Image (cartoon, rainbow, N blue to C red; front, side):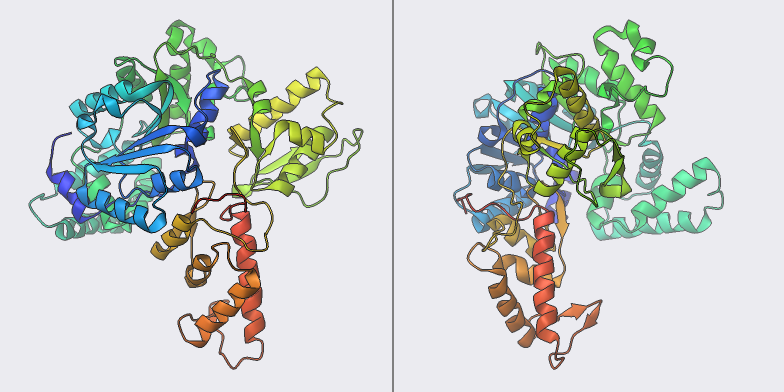
Length: 534
C-alpha cells in the first residue's frame, strides 16, 4: 500500500482496536474444524496480523500461548514503536516481532503462516490495494492455514455509507485533524437537531446512526467517517475477489453470522433456503449468507478463508464437538437432577438476557457441570465422565447431544477450544493475572483470557497490578488500605467516598477486594498456577 495522508494520520491519531474472541486463532481453528479441516493447533502456530496497530491484540495472544510465533505488521511507524514498547513492558520472552511496513513488502520467506488476521484494513484501502492484500494473503497462508478478513458489508452499512459520503464531501483535508473532526461533529449535531422524520423507517435508521457516531473518538472520525477509502462490499464481492487469488470461503468468525451453516434456521419455514439457490453450485453457502444479510442487515463481517482446493465439508460436522474443550457462560439457579427420568424443564440464563430451557436430563447435567467449570473449559469425554454418562449414552442420544451443543454455539453460548486453556476456575491462594494484562489496565481497560474487553475503575487499576501470583487476597487488602490512607486511592461505596474515620472502613475495603477477585475469576482474568511464563 502506498504512502498517503491517511498513513500519517495514524501516527498523529492512533486508532484503538479493542479485543474480540472472533479474532483469535482458537475461533478460526474451530470453524475450520467444523468444516472438516485439520488446522494447526493454535498454541504452537505461526500467526501474522496485518494492520496490528499498537500490537495489543497480538501481545495478548502471545502471552496466552507463548509457544507460538507471532508477527505484527502496520504501516504506522508510531503505532509499531508503541507496540515494541508494550512488548518490553510485558515480557521479553514472548516470541513476537513488530514491523513498520506495508503488507505489500512482506517477503514470502516470512511465511507460511498458520493463521493470518487482517482486521480493519480491507474496507479502508483503495480497490487496487484490496486486490494486492488478497494476493499477499494467498502467498503467505499455509497449506492448512486460515485467514480472518474483516470488512464492512452491505446492505447493513448503507446508512453509514451515506453519512460518510456526506461528511467527506464537506471535509477539507488540508485542515488539521482537530479542525476536521470539529467540522464533522458540527454537521452531525446539525443533523440531529433537525431530523424531524425519525418516526419513519429511514429517519429512525439515520437518527440512530447519527447519535451513535456523534460522540465517537476523534480517531473514529478520522479513520472511519472521514477516511478517503472507507466503504462496504457485498459478501459475494469479497468472496469473488478472494476466489481470483485461489482463496476459498470458509464461513464467518462470529457464531451469529453463520446462518448459512445453522441447521435450525429453517425450523419454522417451509423448505430450506438452499433450495432457492441450488443453481449457484459451489457458491450456494455464500448466496445463503448474503440472503440472510438482507434479512438481518449486517454492517460488518469477519470472513474466513482457506487455500483453494481444501476439502471442505458442505455443512458443519457436529460430531467434531467431541474433540474439543467446551465452556459455556450459562448459569442455573438450581442443581440439575441426576435422574435420567427427570423431564422437568430447567432454565439456564446467559448474557444479553438469553434463556435456554432444557428438558433433556443429559443436557441439563452437562450444562450444569459447565456452569460449575466456567470460565475454564472441559473436554467432552471429561464432561460425560463427570455426570456418569460416558457409558450410558446410546449412539442416537450422543448425536442429539452434540447437535444441541452446536445449536448453543450458534447462539454464541458455547466456546470450543482445541486443548485445555490456562484459565482458572477457582480462586487460588495467590491468584495471578498475566503481566501484559496487568500492565494494560493503566490505559483503563485490559484483555481477558477469553480475549474480551475488561474496563477497569480506579480500584481495579490499583488492585490488578498487585495480582502477580505473589500475594494472597488478604495481602492485597492490606496494600489497598495503605493506598487509601496515603490518598493514592479514593475508596468509594455506591459512588460515595468512604471517610477514613468510618469505623467500617476496613471491612468495606476487604469486602470490595474479595468481590473484585470473584469478578476477575468470572471474567477469565486469572490464569491457572501451572502456567509459568512471565
